Image (cartoon, rainbow, N blue to C red):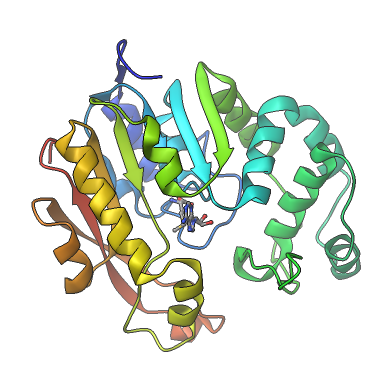
Length: 293
Ligand SMILES: C[S@@+](CC[C@H](N)C(=O)[O-])C[C@H]1O[C@@H](n2cnc3c(N)ncnc32)[C@H](O)[C@@H]1O
């Protein structure tokens, strides 16, 4: 999948887009815990200005992917429902918009939709987007039977999706060679070659947080997973890939990435339901030595 020609990043455009996270197109069309949409402005100057294939194996809402809009990309996530949404958007965004257009945020519609599993991948993708927009904090969580179980979030706007942006995202997914699959990061990274850009954004270990986020993350991504990831990141960098990692700004984490340059990013934590409990946290942007910045 790799080799020339290279994707050359228009840095001026990337900076402009990163500075307008609410209006730039394309921008993430899903809300996602840990989305980097609000950190792009701080990240953009640390990115290499050219690369062959872009790899993002913890895709989530794909904030960096949509910012760079590379024409050759390997995108993946362990969450198969999420990947199905991207595939459906790539294949037939008009049908999805057709399902979403008549819908408004509504508690009864939300619970009826949450309790059924529609047939048809395009309809299911539209329902995923509706639930994502109207649920509490854009959280994606399933019960032991794999059913989405996040409560209604009482959205403040009557707005389900920005259809122009959704179409722009579909065009980005359709352009060139953008591949999507549901798998563990290690499988996804098998195809990386020298000169590729790899962006790694795993669920964070956040040891200073007492609100349940630690337990939630331990299930999602254990410390053993963090070590497995760091080892793979070091190998990829040694083999000539540009590797960028975002992670918690904790000494234990930083030690896993010896030799990588560490930049400190700041953000306001948005996981707490009570806005008064939102706190400023530091995150780390770790760049392999061959990246500029
Ligand atoms: C912090 S989020 C990524 C956010 C993304 N960068 C964005 O801008 O929205 C981490 C993602 O990793 C995925 N994930 C968790 N464990 C994984 C694994 N072992 N392999 C691949 N993806 C995994 C989760 O489903 C989640 O979407």
